[in-house]
Length: 252
Ligand SMILES: NC(=O)c1ccc[n+]([C@@H]2O[C@H](COP(=O)([O-])OP(=O)(O)OC[C@H]3O[C@@H](n4cnc5c(N)ncnc54)[C@H](O)[C@@H]3O)[C@@H](O)[C@H]2O)c1
View 1 (cartoon, rainbow, N blue to C red):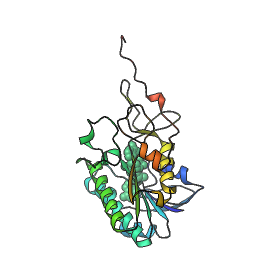
View 2 (view 1 turned 135 degrees about the vertical axis):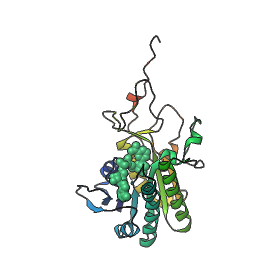
View 3 (view 1 turned 120 degrees about the vertical axis):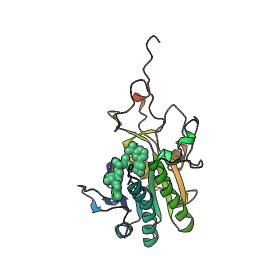
View 4 (view 1 turned 90 degrees about the vertical axis):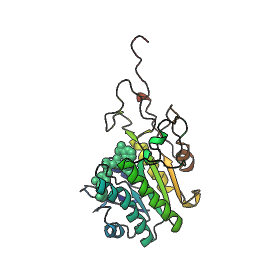
């Protein structure tokens, strides 16, 4: 497949590229410069014309772009970026869109006290936090396009990422005496989940808009990754057992 990647120069991008290269033809884009053996186009996802132009000749688009802090730019990237991706798909007859975001664009504050089997088909409650809210709006735009156009949207939700070998994480990982987030995954397994979504037959999807929780099998059971495992046939290879253990309190 010819695949356009938006926001491909962030933390997740290289892992997605690693999973796809050799199997697909990649056109990687980002607002920042990138050195890559693949085709590279410097692209701001908030530019409608730019995204439409970059999508010409593609079979699929994967959106990894995100901007977290700034009200206007977060909206432009996280919300408008998805609108632009959908218009590009409509313009060029691209049927496969893969979107990404944080789990709390779906399971926001209202779900924090729930503690069992939260699944990706529950009603979205992103709350008002800028990152979650703008990503959730972007998701809603894609959902509506999936109803009006012949477009298949698969959204993969993530939270914490770990290096499978060193168990290091971008934010330093779990602090002593705390538990790891019950929504954690190895970078390599995250890349493989995107590949699984890209390669699944569209006819095998139950609907034109499906969302998946992407984290490895963990003991907590607060969230469920069953849909990603069953529908995408995705198998996490790393279970991050090394960060499961809480140190015992003194005297125990
Ligand atoms: N890293 C995490 O902890 C984490 C957690 C949960 C979900 N996610 C989701 O995973 C996906 C990938 O995130 P990441 O971790 O790689 O984030 P990142 O911040 O490392 O990378 C985002 C990329 O988007 C690019 N970008 C920003 N503005 C842009 C614009 N206007 N046009 C084009 N590109 C632009 C950035 O240059 C960067 O390369 C996102 O959807 C994010 O919401 C990440």
